[in-house]
Length: 429
Image (cartoon, rainbow, N blue to C red; front, side):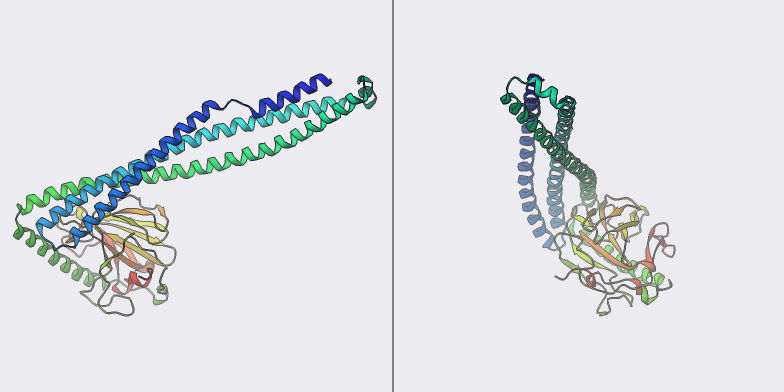
């Protein structure tokens, strides 16, 4: 019994702590090297992206001329190409990290099984050891020294079981942690895939818009300025008719209007420059008279990520450009929040969410647009984001039937009193 017990203990120690993981370790090393390389590529692309964005911002500051617009579109396309590369490297990195985590999970499972087996075998030996009577055990020893030696071995065996249980618990915690991290990486991968799809759509539409612009203007500045003037006139006409139509809608109870407070909403863009504010001079932050702006506009080059200003549900989405001649919001998204507010994002070049989807604050929902003659731009005269804000109980999404040019499209509609100034709820500058 003594001899077998000694052999078992030695075998347990060797088999548990020196299991061959060399193949897995080598794979982990290779994967980590590839992950590090992908991160370096991404960092280089991000640096290039910042330079391209700076150049694009400078071009957008110039006056609205055909030459300037064409240059801006060229710069936007270059930046969009870099954006696509950055997103793709993010996808590559996520795939590699998921692959590495899967290897770690398999390793955790093997470790857990090894610990369990070692514990099972140790318990079997303890049971065998305990089955001998005290008298029989003493008679089987040659000397008293053998008794003390086997007693020490038994103590080591008990300590080994305790140690195995502790390491088993640690391996189980590692398994749970790696599984959770894998789930997060898989969600990240889904998000990046949506972003890639949206960016490709923006790139395609930007290329189409540039070709269409040059064809319509015949590369002549006068024709381009005429086109911009028509867009401005259509914008004013749309806002006037919309105000008249919405004034007939019943306004929400004043008690339903959320209290204005800075920081209730977050910025929809990473870089914030307001180019047109809400209304005229209404200190109440509500829209009362015709001819005023029913939201705020932000400077944003085509393809800039647009984020939800607060968590909520995508209530509705659409594109007024689906009806030819409807120079309205273009591609828009309406999100209902949990605090009695609903936010509108208009003139988007792409959206990457679906109706009914739950979104979080800061989540990318689409990309800014507004390039004249681009599908989804509506009546815009240049790249920007329009952000509108409503009292939720006062806004409805229905067809704009009173408009000849837009009667077949649906848009968010509300009494003018139920439009709110977004800046009253956004963070301070």
